[in-house]
Image (cartoon, rainbow, N blue to C red):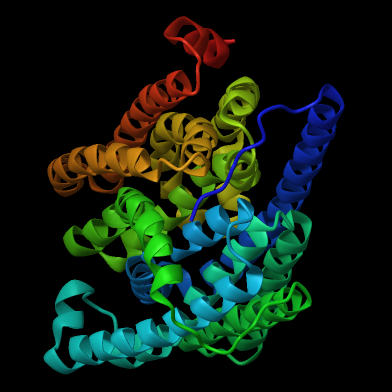
Length: 440
């Protein structure tokens, strides 16, 4: 499948596209900010009604299905954005093949979870997690997989505001369900997992209704001529997603292994606070991906560096705010039982700020058809993460996990800058021009 890029864009159209981009980023940021507020409120409910021990158990229970979705998605969601965004695949074709793919993967997942429970492997991988809770959490796999695939189609269509509304509705349902099941009915970790499933069901129903209006077909179909290019593109970026996931979350497994679920509970607060810096970068990156797929590379050479510089300034300012106000925020929202999460959060901030800025560049790289470069940078960073985690966590606890992650994020940022420069030069921009554009 191929598509032709526009050779020229008039000044009027360019201004219109820039306004559209600004509007979409503003919409995404606003919705993500509201979702973050709801997420913080939800985290408060979990922290106060579960405590560090059970909060850590819930975090690990939900981490397992999230990992399965990530492993088994094969980058199909990225392929949906790329091919639908470049108008080389119809919505009906993409949606029907997404349904077929989800059904096939769900069978594989069910067998994997059953095998882990039957052999007792789950007790070795995640000590302290009951098979009953894992089985319940695994129901999130087909829901989550189909949700990210359908979201990819809408993102490719650049229905950004609509997709943001779905994200917000899921956060509202999750908070309401957690409040009812944990506060009113005192259902503990099981209630928290059920609330997560309720949010996923509502989000998937909304996405299905929206895609149906765009001509989606939900009857499963499978054609090699459709699947092959999607898998080819998806796998080139999928490896990077897997490696990034481990860069983001491997430390949680190792904290749970070397330390205790209580430490996991504290560390999740540190991570949640630090990753608040990614809210705006993710908003910009979310919109840039389909834009880069549909825009001439030379136009992106002029556009992306402007966004990168703006996001960098915001990330640094946000880190300063968290350093100054992070401790009282943790005490007020999560209680003083989580005060020990402050210093690990501070240690995460340098790398988190750098990583956030370069999300803009990695989305541009993927949108131009080079997701493999993001995979290479993520792989190099993972090697560094593993080495530092095994050395730091047993000696320095969750502070060591934070330092290891921060250093790894910085490595990803440096490599992403190098790869962006390489791709920009392919599009006709010289080395000096690339450096000047990014640095401003």
